[in-house]
Image 1: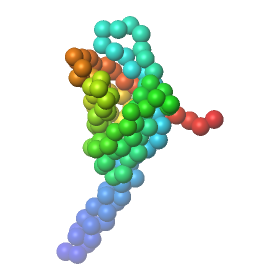
Image 2 (image 1 turned 180 degrees about the vertical axis):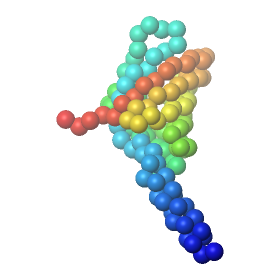
Image 3 (image 1 turned 60 degrees about the vertical axis):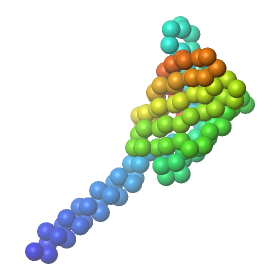
Length: 128
Protein backbone atom coordinates (compact mmCIF):
# COMPACT_ATOMS: atom_id res chain seq x y z
CA UNK A 1 0.00 0.00 0.00
CA UNK A 2 2.90 2.38 0.57
CA UNK A 3 4.23 2.10 -3.00
CA UNK A 4 1.14 3.65 -4.70
CA UNK A 5 1.13 6.52 -2.19
CA UNK A 6 4.87 7.10 -2.71
CA UNK A 7 4.45 7.01 -6.50
CA UNK A 8 1.50 9.41 -6.33
CA UNK A 9 3.51 11.77 -4.11
CA UNK A 10 6.49 11.72 -6.46
CA UNK A 11 4.28 12.29 -9.51
CA UNK A 12 2.56 15.21 -7.83
CA UNK A 13 5.95 16.72 -6.92
CA UNK A 14 7.19 16.43 -10.51
CA UNK A 15 4.02 18.05 -11.87
CA UNK A 16 4.23 20.95 -9.43
CA UNK A 17 7.90 21.50 -10.28
CA UNK A 18 7.18 21.41 -14.02
CA UNK A 19 4.36 23.93 -13.61
CA UNK A 20 6.64 26.28 -11.67
CA UNK A 21 9.35 26.04 -14.35
CA UNK A 22 6.86 26.78 -17.13
CA UNK A 23 5.23 29.72 -15.33
CA UNK A 24 4.97 32.91 -17.35
CA UNK A 25 7.37 35.69 -16.41
CA UNK A 26 6.90 38.80 -18.51
CA UNK A 27 9.26 41.15 -16.67
CA UNK A 28 11.09 43.31 -19.18
CA UNK A 29 10.68 45.71 -22.07
CA UNK A 30 8.34 44.89 -24.95
CA UNK A 31 7.84 46.74 -28.24
CA UNK A 32 5.54 46.30 -31.19
CA UNK A 33 2.49 47.75 -32.86
CA UNK A 34 -0.98 48.93 -31.98
CA UNK A 35 -3.54 48.52 -34.80
CA UNK A 36 -6.59 50.73 -34.18
CA UNK A 37 -9.93 49.30 -35.34
CA UNK A 38 -11.02 50.87 -38.60
CA UNK A 39 -7.60 52.36 -39.40
CA UNK A 40 -5.16 51.07 -41.98
CA UNK A 41 -1.90 52.11 -40.39
CA UNK A 42 -0.42 50.87 -37.13
CA UNK A 43 1.10 52.89 -34.32
CA UNK A 44 4.18 52.02 -32.26
CA UNK A 45 3.71 50.51 -28.81
CA UNK A 46 6.25 50.15 -26.00
CA UNK A 47 5.44 48.43 -22.71
CA UNK A 48 7.65 47.96 -19.64
CA UNK A 49 6.45 45.19 -17.31
CA UNK A 50 7.47 44.04 -13.83
CA UNK A 51 5.92 40.80 -12.61
CA UNK A 52 5.88 39.73 -8.96
CA UNK A 53 3.99 36.44 -8.73
CA UNK A 54 0.55 37.18 -10.14
CA UNK A 55 0.90 40.97 -9.69
CA UNK A 56 1.91 43.22 -12.55
CA UNK A 57 3.15 46.83 -12.58
CA UNK A 58 4.85 48.90 -15.23
CA UNK A 59 4.14 51.45 -17.91
CA UNK A 60 2.96 51.75 -21.50
CA UNK A 61 3.22 54.29 -24.31
CA UNK A 62 4.29 54.78 -27.90
CA UNK A 63 8.02 54.65 -27.07
CA UNK A 64 10.42 54.24 -24.16
CA UNK A 65 10.55 57.96 -23.34
CA UNK A 66 6.77 58.56 -23.37
CA UNK A 67 5.30 56.20 -20.77
CA UNK A 68 2.17 56.13 -18.57
CA UNK A 69 2.61 54.05 -15.41
CA UNK A 70 0.18 51.52 -13.96
CA UNK A 71 -0.20 49.39 -10.85
CA UNK A 72 -2.62 46.64 -9.94
CA UNK A 73 -2.22 44.58 -13.08
CA UNK A 74 -2.80 40.82 -12.93
CA UNK A 75 -1.20 37.69 -14.35
CA UNK A 76 -3.46 34.66 -14.61
CA UNK A 77 -1.67 31.83 -16.42
CA UNK A 78 -0.75 33.32 -19.78
CA UNK A 79 -3.30 36.16 -19.49
CA UNK A 80 -2.25 39.70 -18.53
CA UNK A 81 -4.70 42.47 -17.63
CA UNK A 82 -4.01 46.04 -16.58
CA UNK A 83 -5.36 49.59 -16.87
CA UNK A 84 -3.31 52.64 -17.81
CA UNK A 85 -4.61 56.08 -16.87
CA UNK A 86 -4.02 58.78 -19.47
CA UNK A 87 -4.79 61.60 -17.06
CA UNK A 88 -7.56 63.83 -18.38
CA UNK A 89 -7.65 61.87 -21.63
CA UNK A 90 -9.29 58.71 -20.23
CA UNK A 91 -7.70 55.32 -19.77
CA UNK A 92 -6.69 52.19 -21.67
CA UNK A 93 -7.59 48.65 -20.64
CA UNK A 94 -5.14 45.95 -21.79
CA UNK A 95 -6.28 42.30 -22.08
CA UNK A 96 -3.31 40.32 -23.35
CA UNK A 97 -2.16 36.74 -23.94
CA UNK A 98 1.43 35.50 -23.73
CA UNK A 99 2.44 33.08 -26.49
CA UNK A 100 6.08 32.08 -25.94
CA UNK A 101 8.12 35.21 -26.65
CA UNK A 102 5.19 37.21 -28.02
CA UNK A 103 2.35 39.10 -26.32
CA UNK A 104 -0.84 39.83 -28.26
CA UNK A 105 -4.31 41.00 -27.37
CA UNK A 106 -6.85 43.79 -27.20
CA UNK A 107 -6.66 47.35 -25.93
CA UNK A 108 -9.79 49.38 -25.20
CA UNK A 109 -9.59 53.14 -24.76
CA UNK A 110 -12.38 54.91 -22.94
CA UNK A 111 -13.15 58.29 -21.42
CA UNK A 112 -12.91 61.81 -22.79
CA UNK A 113 -15.79 60.99 -25.17
CA UNK A 114 -13.83 58.14 -26.75
CA UNK A 115 -14.61 54.46 -27.04
CA UNK A 116 -11.96 52.89 -29.24
CA UNK A 117 -10.46 49.44 -29.65
CA UNK A 118 -7.18 48.16 -30.99
CA UNK A 119 -5.14 44.99 -31.45
CA UNK A 120 -1.66 44.95 -30.00
CA UNK A 121 1.32 42.74 -30.76
CA UNK A 122 4.55 42.92 -28.72
CA UNK A 123 7.94 41.22 -28.79
CA UNK A 124 10.74 41.41 -26.22
CA UNK A 125 13.24 44.23 -26.65
CA UNK A 126 16.75 42.85 -27.03
CA UNK A 127 19.72 44.85 -25.77
CA UNK A 128 22.26 45.58 -28.47
